[in-house]
Length: 166
Image (cartoon, rainbow, N blue to C red; front, side, top):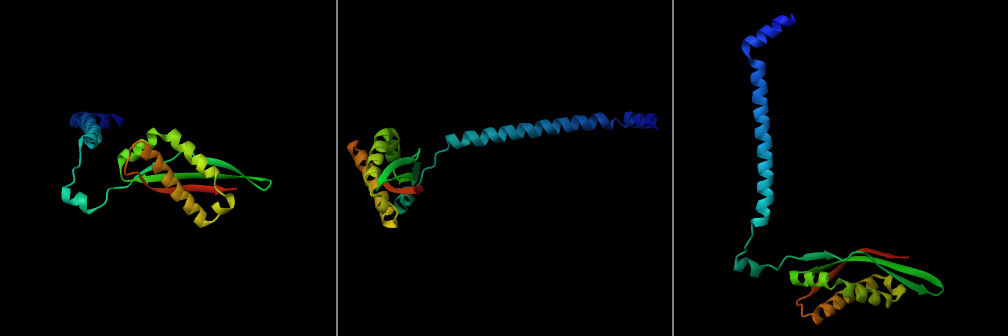
């Protein structure tokens, strides 16, 4: 019985043809996949979108966010109890130069923010108004630092992503 199957396959030649067709189809699929990947990855770098002048003036610029990591940790002493604040936030600007300036001057900005947070009243930080005042204060502080380096317009907002009081 096995001999008959071998003779029938040899007579039709279908086994080798199918293998060759499968291998060619597989090579075409792999080539198309690699070619498509290279095309899409390289086209994203070369493509520059230019908005018409009318469209750019009618809508505001896109917001650019920068996460101010690592988190800011500040110690407080309320009465005889040690307390601490851990805050992490993201700043938002519409000017890429402002974000680049923040990244460039990050050590100075971090130092100023830690000093600013250390001066806050721990009990006031527990209220929504206190958190909002700190958020606005951070925006003002970062903009003051950027203004010393002639970067304008600066930061529009600071958004808390983590705010823990303990």
